[in-house]
Image 1 (cartoon, helix red, strand yellow):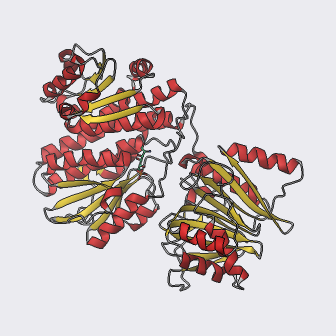
Image 2 (cartoon, helix red, strand yellow):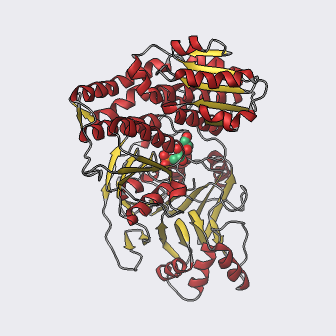
Image 3 (cartoon, helix red, strand yellow):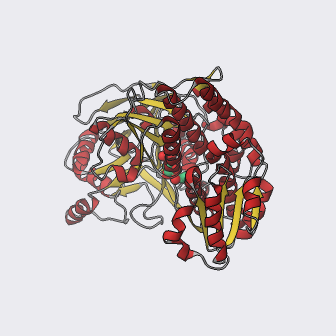
Length: 615
Ligand code: AGP
């Protein structure tokens, strides 16, 4: 999603902005641009595609002495919402070559504002919603307002979710910034200040960060910042000291971040576990802070892969703790009138902690009176800051757009929550608590063993790489893994893939089966496997290319399958209860290898963003 970086007060501001934009590349974008000031003129350079094209353009212009570095610069990576991917629509957007604005989010009432501005004589050069911002600034500055007053008038006019930074030749040593729902951080330096979509984008410049809150606006000067809340009251926001981390993140010898993130699961997951389980069976989750003091229903909301983790969590919590769980897509929850009957608490799950849909669901539930909690990977993210209680996956930065290690670590937290709830509501005796905690501690090793089937998965990938459409089937705990397997595959290989509950096939989706359509099932023997195998048989009888990834018993029972991948041998109870964590691995590997076979951009697949900060 769009990334914003700005620097004021450093001689090589443009270069520092580019370094910041590089740190935001993983979020996904389709064009980039930069604005700076030199010799009293605004310099704008923009390009379609990846950042290196922008860098090439700037160095060409610098060699030709047509680009000068300056002490103020704004930069942007754009993920298109309004208007095609092209240079005109790339940010910064300008007005009369005197104002430049970079923006993340959507100005929802831009059409009416644009009509008014056109009737007042402003000329629009892009199809974006953002372009109303520089023109509104220009309009109010021309009326005699200073930068702060002009910015406030702009804020009065606009509606939507946004984080933006504006610079003006009329106020050469100032930046006006504001946020509403989209994230924005300000970094404090020595006679210099910085702005970024997240703290990591400016952690090469400072470790002293202020997160603006919703409705805040600020004037960033060379030697200080003034922050105001939505009622225009001057306010002090907390300064947080962050650790510079992103500089250390490399692919570590792997071809892609996704591959590295898949393979580092056995070594990073112990960080998730060590915080949750102490001394083998003491669970470190505060159920009082989680808002579950008495038996009540629990609401979990999330998006994408995090939503599939929530689905698995429902199965576990209902099965182990006998507590009803309602799972809702964050993007749906906010726009209906959900009943909170029987509920006291909600948990949102988000790797980034910035997904706008998920953040809005959290805020909505807070308004409805629920205790709001989060499972996040990025500590200090907006969701983490707004949740009353957070549990951290702690698996380090996830750079590949496709979630891998964050999914498995979310699952672990949910499993441990189910043990904690089972203990609280007397559904688990201490022997079982001990056994389940032991299962959790065995996971890093079990995942390491699952990773060893990579070569067999590669063969499946080669076999299905040219398919037009692929079906994933699962039952029970493995139904969400079928959905996750399909999501992962479509995200990075661009092959159409759908996941279905195996028992639902006969109610409609079976019509999709024709000769050679791959039907992939993840399966472990848990006493109910025969039902799933019958569903597979139904697909086989209609010509599907049946691929089974399962334990020995299932493979023997489904000998008719065209391709059979046997997983390592695990204790029956462990493998059936924790099957989602085991089977997430072949699902991830399969998507990764199909994408590699097809030569797609694995870490930054087309159209996708890592941090989805628009609705
Ligand atoms: C997963 O591979 C996706 N990239 C996507 O579905 C993601 O899980 C979703 O956007 C939610 O993100 P979050 O966990 O950061 O909130």
